[in-house]
Image (cartoon, helix red, strand yellow):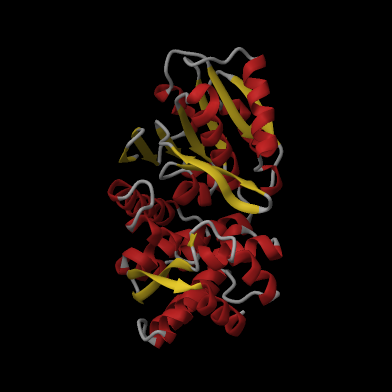
Length: 342
C-alpha cells in the first residue's frame, strides 16, 4: 500500500492506494457508521462492508440529483444519524459525489470517507474534495469543496468492472499524464495492453501516479482559483458531449482532449506529432477521438458551462506532452472550433 496526503482547508485526506476494502474498519471512528452505495456494488461486495447501516441507491448519472440527496437525508434521519455519525461511500464516482455532498451538508457537515470501486473514481472522482450533483441536466452544477478523511483504492475491486468502465478510467489517467508527466505518458504508451488488462503492477503504478499528480495540484490550489483548472483538460467540451449525446464520462473526456489538442496545435502551442501521440494512445485504449454530435447542441451546452466567466472560458491547452497552460478562450472562438472539429 502507498499513502498520499491532501492537506485541504476542511482537513487532511489520506489517499490509500493498494489498501483493501476489508481493512476499511481500521479507518473508521468509534461512532455510528452509515454506508452509501449502489445496488450493483452491494450485490457484489456487501459481505466485505464494515458494520454500518447501508443506504443503497440506483445506478446511472440520472440519480445524481438533489432528489436523491433528499432521499438519503430522509434515510439518515430515520436511521438516527447525528453530528457524531460517519458516512462511508462505497462505489464509483456517482456514489462518491453524492456521499461527499450529503456528508458535507447534513447537519452542516459530518466526517466521511470513500472506498472507490471503479478506476474512474480512484483516479479522479474520489480524490480532491469536489462533491456535487447535477441540476437541470448540467453536470456538477451544485456542490461543495470538502475533503474526505480517507480514500481507499482497492485494486482487487477493479476486476469486476466491465471493459467500458475500465476505458473510462483510462481517459482520466491519460489526462493526468498529458498535462503533467511526460514519463508517465510514455509508460502508458509502452504498457497499453497491460493497462487495459489490469495487470496488477501496471495499474497500481498508474493509479498511484495519477493520485500523486492530482494530490499535488489540489494541495497547491484546493478550490480551483488557478492551477487546479488544469485538471479540466478535455472536460469543457467533454461535459458538453456528455450532456448532449449521453456517452459515458470517460469517452466524452477523451473526445474533449482530442478537441483541446487540435485547438492547441491551431494556436501554435502543440506540435503535430504530439497531437498524433495523444490521439493514437486514446485510440489504442479503445477511447474515441471524435464523436458524432450536433455542434449546435454542444455550443448551447458550452454557454452554460460552470467554468464560464462572462464571455470567456478558462480552457486547458497543451504546449507539449506533459505540459499544459490555461488560457482564456472566448465562447465565440470555442464555438467556431467545435463546429469545425466535431
